[in-house]
Amino acid sequence: MEKPLTADETFEKTDYTTNRLPTGEYENCVFNLCDFSNSDLSGIVFSECVFNGCNLSMAKLKKTALKDVRFKDCKMLGLRFEDCHDFLFAVDFDKCILSHASFYSLKLKKTAFKNSILHETDFTEADLSNALFANCDLKRAVFENTMLEKADFRSSYNYSIDPERNKIKKAKFSMSGILGLLEKHDIEVE
Image (tube, rainbow, N blue to C red; front, side, top):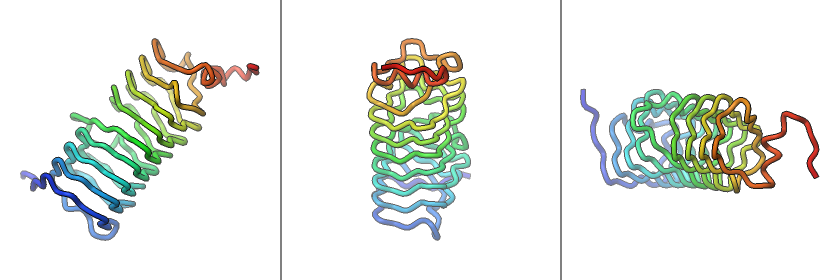
């Protein structure tokens, strides 16, 4: 059964916490200041959509498709992106709160995380090659068997990445961020 298509529409200040966003395909749509917290977005397809100032915290993403979707100024606590449909999965984030989110085992090549808070976010076994972490707070973010080759962390901070447990060849770090690569050794650098 084909899903209904909604294209080129803007949704303003809509509360989807009690009334679910209808299942379907949303193409080139803009969601401004909408509340999706704890809502069920399962099975919905978003293509080339933009979410501005939305709250998506704890939303269910089972088989949700995110194809070239941008999130700006969004609150996205506890999202399990690994539940999304992985075909053509492409997202980027600017000024978002992504704490306690999980990107377990996802392909996130060239994904941009800008000016965002990613406290305790799980990147275990994800492919973040060529990803950009620009001015992000990565306090207690989890990097375990993560592909970080050519990723850029130069302006980010509070990360702890074990070079022996992750692939970091040609990744970029600032001199002040080097401590995040040495944390497991419990050494002092002055």
